[in-house]
Image (cartoon, rainbow, N blue to C red):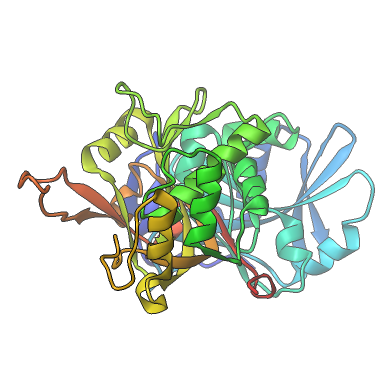
Length: 409
């Protein structure tokens, strides 16, 4: 049965990477879809029947590819206009289970996005969506995902359930199937770091500050220790793993560079920033507005890598960690005397979630808000900053990770 054309306008991406609000233009007829496959893959594409259903096939290099295909369309109101779906038919799982173990056979779950003269293929990894005990009726993709593929040729991300979504511009689809085009290795770097990161465990200020002090970390005395501890661990990871295409610059920024923690070196060539944020807060402090806008304008994008944590305030624990910090930095404390940074101190944090947000010209206005900071102690106005809204961020996500309930304790 053909998919019903959507009646609401939504975000559409054009071939030159611009965004417009318009009606969907899905390919609904089987011959239209076959022609698209033939256009990008050649004449070795066919239609086969499976019961009363149609499957598209492509043969190459001794392999037969089966494409379980549907159109990528807007979900309709009241969903946000950047959110699209590829409908998963009930019979897909039956076909997958029947053919998945056959030699020289690959089964791919493919959504096709079509708008004017642009065709983008979306592969939802079949094992993730069909090989688990789930009954998803749709797989989701966002306008930013499509934009990324138009700009870079291919874009890959993982959602919070670790489902893999790969978005491929039509011109790259044949090379992608042949294994000649792959996603960024950056995501694998962060996934590897997450496996070593102390998610789910309570970390006290004393533990973190003492570890940074022993290692000679220049920011070990800072009161916002949770954020500096995150940066300390990530820099340590980069050094131990000898990762050369990401440079940590948080404590050694150069005058000719923008003021962000991370520099992703060419050919990637963009900036990123690490953020430690209370999971209960709806916003996270961002960076200087001028720097943010320059990063997006000059380098095309900016990454925010946010690690969210639960927090125990030190004032609820008799200022135990504020006093301990004073002792570690060499300040004397007399019972009943002044306690440095008493109100600001976190006693302990427990990291539960991480997310990478990419800001670019398509989505930046959805999550950036003006942050009013007041004035410097001298009375001069502070440089205006942005706040990062942690709501409505689906269209900015690159990678996300949440601690499983059984791992939290």
